[in-house]
Length: 306
Image (tube, rainbow, N blue to C red; front, side):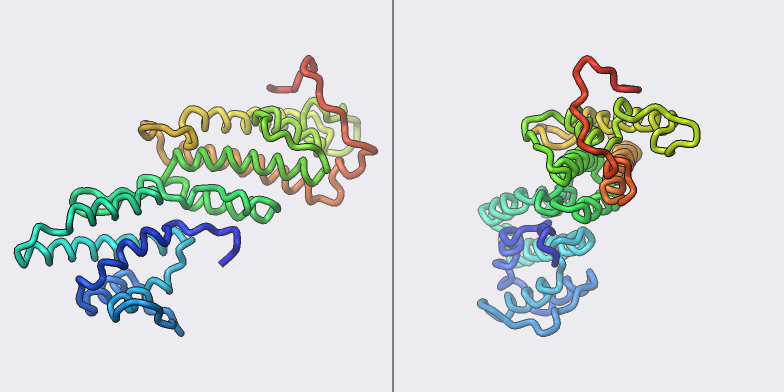
């Protein structure tokens, strides 16, 4: 497992389910895991706990808790187990799972963005797989990996995707400035950060030299127009996140968002980030040939197409 990957379901939530395994027969424990195509981990070494908890652990050890598909299937296992425990209690005259047990389970799952409803079904209205992990973004490869994760899962969680797209733009801009040995102001708003990063790589439209006949395509007027539009698009993602994305402690999820909005935001962020990273890595990029880093654009200086 890469150090940058973060577990999508915490050990706290997993242990809350594990602690109930003494109420299930061993055959049911194995059946529910295998119904979701899990098998005991090869070479598993039992730890503490009774036979049933150790059986649970042997299957849980085969789950990649950083992988969205694995976690989705594991949550279905947990849901089946909890509902079986509840049915067994009622079958023998009980009231189902105890209220305090259900409350503890709800609290544990809620920390990971999962909701346990009154029928003991798990809902993942906000799954942590779209959280951008800061420690993954110290290098370009981390940003590329996070872009791919958001591309894969963003359509299912559009407000998460929009929030992640903004974070990726911000992380890319900061990486560019750090690689160019330029200061990074953590208090700087994102539009200014975007402009600074583009300027550092000679990609801001207002800093691109006038085109000359037979000159570099980097100086072409068409490139300047594209850069101006791309600058505005990247800033637009930040504005979209401020209105619809995650990260502002909303009491309710925004309505009207769909997969097309997620793909649009993520696609825009990906285009901007990839241009910046490609230019940063290009040994023949214009910024490498400049005698010094250009001075910041004055506030009064117009920025093309903005």
